[in-house]
Amino acid sequence: MTVVVTHSTPADSSFSTTGATAWDANHTLSGVGTMAGQDANNVAITGGAIDGTTVGATTSTTGAFTTLSASSTVSGTGFSTYLASPPAIGGTAASTGRFTTVTSTIATGTAPFTVASTTAVANLSIGGNAGTVTNGVYTTDTGTVTNTMLAGSITNAKLVNSSITFGSTAQALGSTVSGINGVTIDNGIIGGTTAAAGTFTTLTATGQTSLGGAAGAESFRVVTRASATDYVEADGGTSGTSGVYLSAQGSSTNINLFLSAKTGAVRFYTGGKGSLEQFRVSNTASAVNYVQVTGAGAGNPPVISSQGATTPDLDLTLTPKGAGRVNITTSIKPKVNSTTSVTSPLAWNSTSYDEYALTALANALTISADANTAPADGQRMMFRFKDNGTARALTWTTGATNAFRVVGVTLPTTTVASKLLYVGCIYNAADSRWDAIAVGQEA
Image 1 (cartoon, helix red, strand yellow):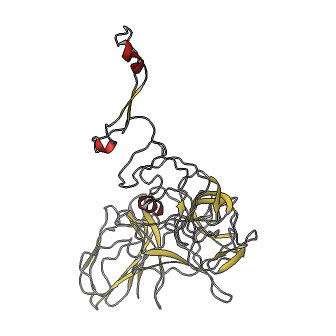
Image 2 (cartoon, helix red, strand yellow):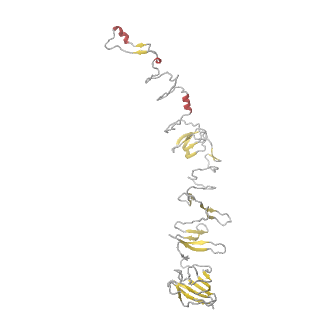
Image 3 (cartoon, helix red, strand yellow):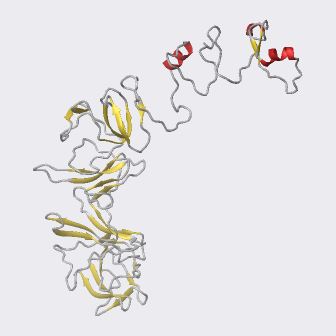
């Protein structure tokens, strides 16, 4: 190694005249040896440039650079391994980036990239065909969008193929889709923009179903009831059948069918929609009593009765309009209490019966006052007596509320052996008395 020493002549010219010339020039010191002869393993280069020299040619080691530039090939096992399987860009902390070309080598059927942003990505190329993708997740890089899940839409996209297949139906692009077969539409709105006719084998909704208009303006609404086991079934009819049916169905043994109006009336029509009203159920605020209609089996009559919370007695009122009357097209069948023997006193109730028929009377009998606390004004009651072949004494209760009072007749005090005896009474509500107005004795 050669060391060059540079100096100048001292200002005080202290060098000898003889040696001044020699010291005015730079001198080269030889014999100091090479870098290898000095402390070669403990060298620090803190400045300057390494130019035209191979770094790490014999023994490589690590290096750190602010900028690494190569004018020709960069090679080596480490570079080859790194470039063959590089880490994901933004895999740890994502940030913005700009690329001239993004190429995926992932096999068809998997997703080479995902557009997760709701902002449209413009001029995105799929298989060399540029378009705009919004909210799309694509599973191939061959130019065909296959099994694509879209959270938004694809706009201005260029597709290589001239048709698209929905399940088993191929549909030319740009044409109207006339039928889609074998496809599952999941989490999508059908007819959200333009509604059209649809046919379904089964229509199931987990929430509210609105028919005949949008929610809030629909003609028919079906709401979901959690854990429901019973339901309403509507059955159509065919030519020659008795009609259509609306029924309660389900797994329960007995299922009521409720039909309710919102404070208005429930009205029943014949002759078409809203044409001829035949029956109306009007609203009564705070109603606790109601009319019940009960059918009957063969040989027994159906029943129209008053029912409800009122106890023990509840009238059934039939009211005509204005001065009209309640018309009964046949005779009214009276309720008769018929017994062969009775214990004295006779406890009777005008609510329960219209006539008491006492046959084969075997003892004296006192007839008590009516147990009904509020008989109807003008109500009728008939008593029929017949003894068992021996005359029996009769005592009538008078002078008390709802007791007997004679009007134009004499109340009988005994029966005639083996003969019929009738006593007819009318209730006078003003006086709270049962007026005896007719007595008939068999001759």
